[in-house]
Amino acid sequence: MFDEELVKLKENGLYRHLRAQTYLSPNIALIEGREVILFSGNDYLGFSSHPKIKQAACEAIAKYGTSARASRLISGNNELYRTLEMVLAEFKGKEAALVFPTGYHANLSLLTVLATKNDVIYMDKLSHASLYDGCLLSGAILRRYRHNDLNHLENLLAGEASSGRPFIVTEGVFSMDGDLAPLPGLKNLADNYGCLLLVDDAHGTGVLGLDGQGTSDHCGIKLEIEMGTLSKALGGLGGYVAGDQGLINFLINRARPFIFTTGLPPATLAGAKAAIELIAKEPWRRERVLNLAKRVRKILKETGYNIPHGFSPIVPIILGGEEQALALAKHCLKKGLFIPAIRTPAVPKNQARLRMTLSALHSDKEVEQALEILTSAGKELELI
Ligand SMILES: *Cc1c(COP(=O)(O)O)cnc(C)c1O
Image (cartoon, rainbow, N blue to C red; front, side):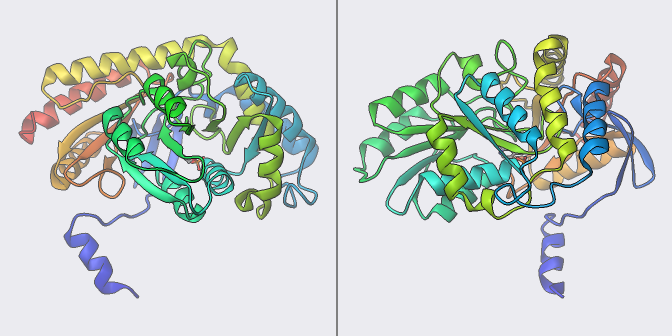
């Protein structure tokens, strides 16, 4: 089935396939029989292998079993949800919080519940697919503004009278570029034009801000609604929305991706709660991953690579063509280094790249090795 389509994808260098990974340690895995160092995950704080988080998860399994057994509104609302949501609300400085099976569910829920047919959603062009899908599913009118371009956004806002409440939607830390949204400027525009500003902080949560609260805290602004995931720096799975109790109650009543799906397993809930508590207790993890990212950015830039300005643990190495990106990734893999090539549609055409991500648990030696391999590979392939 689909033979022709699949051949076409291969011809265009866009064919994707799944590879089995066996993790040997937090950042080393066997991929197709080869042992490689990974610079590819979103486990920024190394929480996916934290002994205390693993212990909390194991205890929850021993006590409650492996499944929620039902959707949350039926009988899948394990008591662990209550404590997790309390801890989350406090962490985000909000009255209440709601946990979803994934960040994808959280975004679909938030956008479909808040936005309706005649509303306008102004969205940063580089926003995550789940935000686009949420917008599509809401039926709202979509206006895309150029990445982080406040002037373009203001032009769009000024040029359109909206009947409903307009929305500005962005990521906090952009997942493929690692740069931050200009939140103070966006907040200003949102206030001036009566918009609700929605920030997907999947990659900022746990990493940025004084105590890891995220990008809004880092930028010194207050958002009415906070959204993020438990599946990246928090080392688990799930999405969350934090805001006032009315919003949370409304989501519980209206959000189809929340209502018509099974609750998270007890292990996931217990693990996430432990993770949030550990963010404040172990600030060295945040400091380490940000310092590593800073060092890697600086050295790769000096080597001659095109590295956009940034601050987060996501370091994109922009190569342009799909072929260059694939060639560099392949070369690295041969030398025992896994950094994934990212191509369209995840990024715009001619913006193909290697997306390198750091973790607090990368050793200095692993980072040095990666930098050496990238330098020699870049020279051999004449990319730098
Ligand atoms: C990963 C990601 C999501 C989806 O979160 P999951 O928990 O993996 O479903 C949403 N938004 C952004 C920006 C992401 O990077």
